[in-house]
Image 1 (tube, one colour):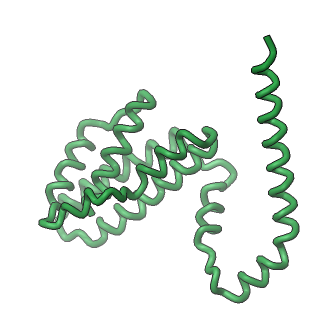
Image 2: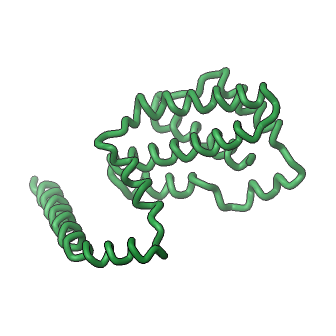
Image 3: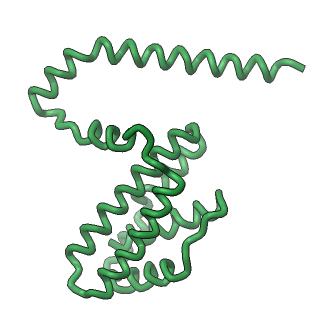
Length: 174
């Protein structure tokens, strides 16, 4: 559980480095208290070199466009919301529940203000990721739709290639 809190701290520091957003002091205190509450003897597992979100974020911020980064950030913030909701439901200590609510509220404010849910794209991405690949109906529908989806993907790839070529030709001009 502490991995989650360290992850949110690192995520917050990353936001601070890349923008003028900052973690409110009372929320930082809540995170510190929650880290203390969830601390265990096996905390070495937190430093196993396999963060939940940070490596993916680092890779994507270098290799993707802003719109994709914003979608990923919204998905990650939703994941934090689900994780903290589960932790709150399992917590017996009212102060821990309140601290988790404080952190969740601030994450949700950040998400709604900076990463709005446009055209339900986030919900659709979550639905796609939750598909049951072993379900025979899903498999049959996928086969039925694959030709059209492939053609759409090819069109997007072609448009992306044209934009990249246009950018390259503009750089070559004096």
